[in-house]
Length: 401
Image 1 (cartoon, rainbow, N blue to C red):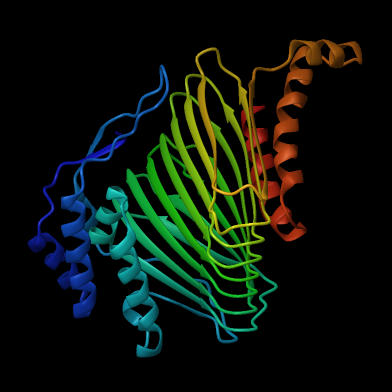
Image 2 (image 1 turned 135 degrees about the vertical axis):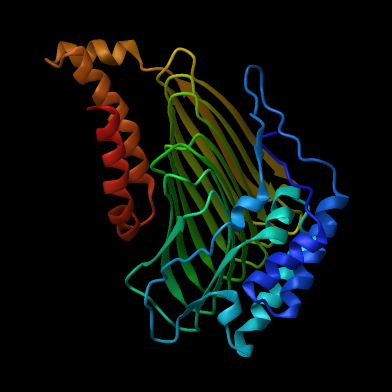
């Protein structure tokens, strides 16, 4: 397993959190229900391939509440709501109730249930009907305490469009951060969700993203993981209604002895749905990366299309990757593809580039750069590329100084 918690979480501890945050009664009850379900489930297991294992790190939950946490939300207008759970009017609290009710009824992930019991900060983003936002909404989640647990609930109503950028950051004292994102994309909505995990110092980051899509909606998730000692990303996207489209694009660069655990799932429940899952991973030094990708097409999802691709580049003799691509198809009237490749730097390519006048270091650097550029090229639109390109290329420049 990746983490273990020193503190035996009790209802009195949950009540203390609610009291400190001055929460309304329903929130306390949701916390208690999450704790009860958490305790009823067996311990989480992380089983990897040969030579790859998770590291157990003890975490004292009481440290998450050692001081009040404050964060800045961007200023938005035109009917867009961006606030904390506790500050919402009665009109919007129904979404909070829906969020907790559905998760408590259906959630089977023990880590998420613990998160829902002990979370210490919350963000609610509401994009109203017909609203098209041309500028991205940038949410900086700055983890100030040693341990932080954040909920982000996004409601994208019918015919709305937005690009949302989540910047996960930390300070020198932060050791463990957990982020749970839930997105409801209603009919004809179009959402770009960019999740960037880049920390100044090595620490432990756990991120779970759950997405529910309705008819004709399009959601592009772009996941970037850089410079984290242990990174665990879990994305589950469910296409519940016809003609909806889900795309997941992921770029990760692990160095030294870092461990990355990536688990992506797209479930196509309705007819004429589309999915695309593309990941590019670069592993250096002694780092380890596990990629589990699943496209699941249900019996009801006739005339659907699914595509999954993973490319891995190993830059260290002891770097390891364990790809687990999976397709689960329950009807014959679909098109579905998957591919996975893992390689070192091709010596023939180095020889070819050197024959054209480049030094060996220049040839090696150009080949590595091609993976960065390839990821930028597969991104779905220019707005996303404009946001991601400087971040990706700055990382490339860092490792090639």
